[in-house]
Length: 157
Length: 304
Ligand SMILES: [Zn+2]
Image (cartoon, rainbow over all chains, first blue to last red; front, side):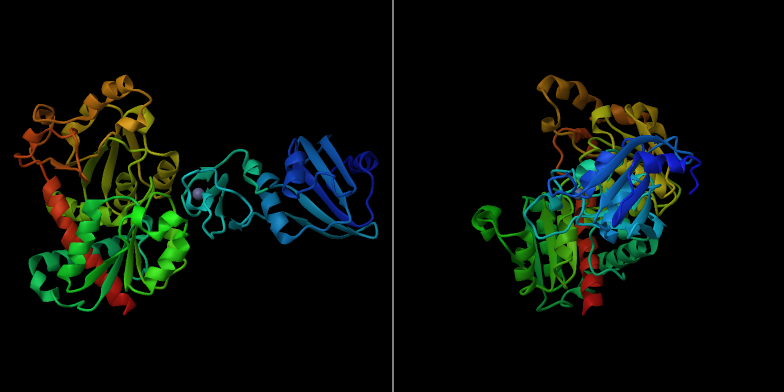
């Protein structure tokens, strides 16, 4: 681990047996990460969240540990939009089985809703939303609207 | 052209544009040569928003090529009113027609529709989005009057909601054209259009006063500022007058200035301008037919 105080983190946020640890989330974005993953605790998942933990790489970072759940590629793609520096650790039987940085996809489909009320995707037409991922935001493929801030708010219910 | 559909002018390269304009010039010079070329071919007109001019222009173009049109009629009397989706409508009409022309109030509607059909589809205007066939006739008119390179153009009026403006601005990035955008602050170009123009390497110069740039212009493209864009009548009146032109305004312009307008106009160009050599808007409207004939010829010819 690159963080000098990694051991402290482990004390703060308990180890999980099987599941996913999302580390190096930008400070304050953990709540949005949970929103993207549709985790609100109602399904009984065991979730640990560390917010504004000191980090070498980011001044302050958030960390989310989800017991019993491995993220799909779609989920990781969208996660990358709000947590571009995140690392995903898949844990099986207390061991980190796989560890990767998120990569920003070129396109996200069916995950975000266009905020433009005049967009064809904001109707009952059989059309899947599609957003091109820009360096600093996302852009609706149908109407061209660019969103740079609060992307998490566009996540479909 | 290697495109099956014409959705936005962004998809057009300089070569594409020149292919259409050259073909339009050939047709303009000798319309008889293509008079019966598309006998038996049907163009489907799907206008979900009233637009007599654009619709008649496409209709005339198709008929002059020897083909005919099928028209879904007014929105009020069609199944659309009963809640049929656009996706269903285009798939049904595709069964009758060899190509489709779509005007729709929602942005992105033509793009979605094109994903459901195999015949060529032309966007004839989608909300505040794009209007690429208008852009082709605009470019044709500009080329005839001022040339497309070493061009200084002012685009004035409602730049925010003006789809003809967005389409034209994108297309002009293919040429050596200096673009000046003149509008009230509340009706400036949408930021995403500015972003795109920057991406294409264009310099975007925005002004709120025509006087700043008028003497330098080869072309002044005027669009209408609509009352309903303003919260109250006073606000509208304050702004509207500043963006109207008449003979007096044009005293500061070069003798060669070409004045254009996508029409219909209300009072943004005074009638006294009509008789001057500056006025090109009726010629521009006339060019709609040969340009749309060329466009249909290229789309139908390719898909056959
Ligand atoms: Zn959209």
